[in-house]
Length: 492
Image (tube, rainbow, N blue to C red; front, side):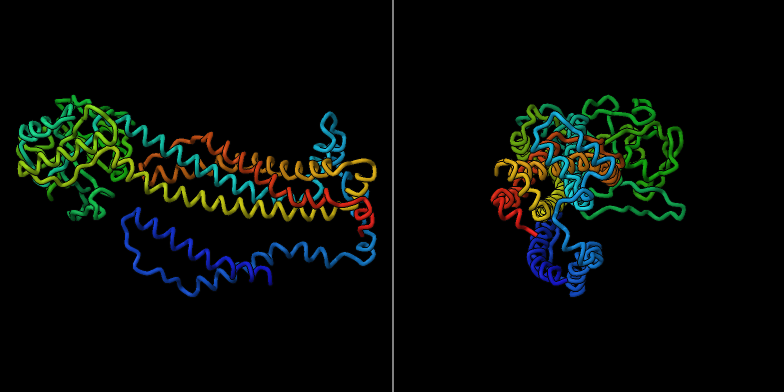
């Protein structure tokens, strides 16, 4: 309890400092202002309570076991006896393994000497590795969706206007800008799901993007967007009063299927449309696509006007697109046309990825903290093992074992524990990555992320384990190697 209290007091201050810094970074990424960093007193109380009770709960079993040891058993414990290791069938099988370096083989057998201690070390290192791999796997899956979204969109910029303008004028102005290859009108208007009580409710965030639902005028012959259909088909020129929903819009109509009719509220007026298809779209809010003729009738605007255009550039480098976007805004401003927002593919990708990377970084930080604690635990476990095997090392030294042999034996045991935890970490990461990908994908795209095993995560965690377990075993190994035969055989 005393050690838990001291550790809790030491950990609370840097923990609060780190939490304040991390919350500041998250607030900046999410465009929030944190006006107070005050922490309620009950949080400090809970941290102190957990810091004291959790170590005590973990220590209860060895404490109870120690109190039940008799004086006779304690005084007759020499650290090596026939019942300590080799009595079970599994341990007998380990003792018959041949053809491996004797020091490595002995280390492998000693790994299973204290199974409860081994399970604790493997559990913590395995959980840390599983979370670390899950973070990088989720990042790789997210990036694959980002790349998929970029491949589905064949334009580089969308310019939205505050008021509808002539299609010909906008096409001439924007098309004349250096770096612009093609311009298409993709008009848009806010939409809502028709409710039985007639209320027009749109659950849109203040940025106008998150949670929005829009009706889009989509040129049927456009090449600006791939149309990977989840069901049904894409729009054709003669499709009047018909609509194609993306998967986010489909979630607003739980009972909608291809062939059914959905009713939208456009400017307060109900519009009934037949669903002819559902298209997969990533990094796109809920959208209903209709032909220009259907859009004009539903929005009640002139067919020669548009409030949004999509632009394809002659090059796709981020710097080039940024410069071209600035030139487009300048040209439109000079013509007296007010731009509501200009959204490039690069800006969209960065803004969307920033949200999930906060979560991934937090996951990796937790995994690193767990790994550090696990390696410290491995150091403690190896130190205890060296103390328990003091007379064993003395016997080894008395029959000719050198200090290098003892050193190799202890370090090999630590590395083997690390490698065993690697297998556990990989197994743990698979369901975690699948579940995390499903959660983030459904939350962001209404479609689960694919399960991707990141080679970087596998290789990096393996390197961390090998180096970390070697370092964790080095100090106990050096202690064991420096023991003389006289000291070890005189140890009681």
